[in-house]
Image 1 (cartoon, helix red, strand yellow):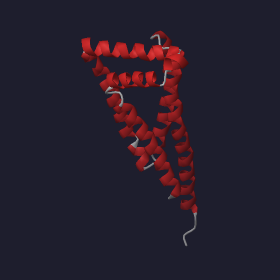
Image 2 (image 1 turned 180 degrees about the vertical axis):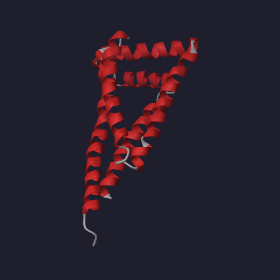
Image 3 (image 1 turned 90 degrees about the vertical axis):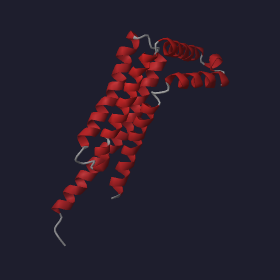
Image 4 (image 1 turned 60 degrees about the horizontal axis):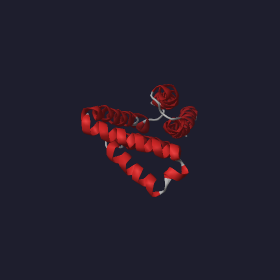
Amino acid sequence: MQVLRSTRRWIALFILGLVLSGVTAFPLVHETSWLVRAAQAVSLDRHLPALNAWLVRVETALADTSSRYPFLAYGTDWLAFGHLVIAVAFVGPWRDPVRNRWMIDVGLIACAGVIVLAFTAGPVRGIPIYWRLIDSSFGLFGAIPLAIVRRKIDSLNALEALQQTAPAA
């Protein structure tokens, strides 16, 4: 039971990460404005001028696009929705990790895909390398709990097999 509880906690952490990623994709204009103000408060322009310039550029682009073409934000609304739907899909492994191990493998593949996408589409879209590294970190940090879950599912599977072969008392 302890392994199952631990497995579920790690899956819940992953689900929480997906939900937070989804929910934060809705208010991008406000979030980037807040981020630029926070960067100013810590004098990011003196310490990391290129990163600061990128944040200001993104804030300006989002504010301009939002005021002139608000319908484009509909695309990030769907991105947010996609994160929330994927989070719901991980309820299956949370309920029955052994039977739904395949979903953990799908998640690990998707985490690897985040890195691949960041380094293939990023240069095409003019995304600076340091931002591609930040984007890639989501794939890396998402893979950590999933890799732990995968090992725990193997333990649960072994425990189930052991219980099935144990002689009745």
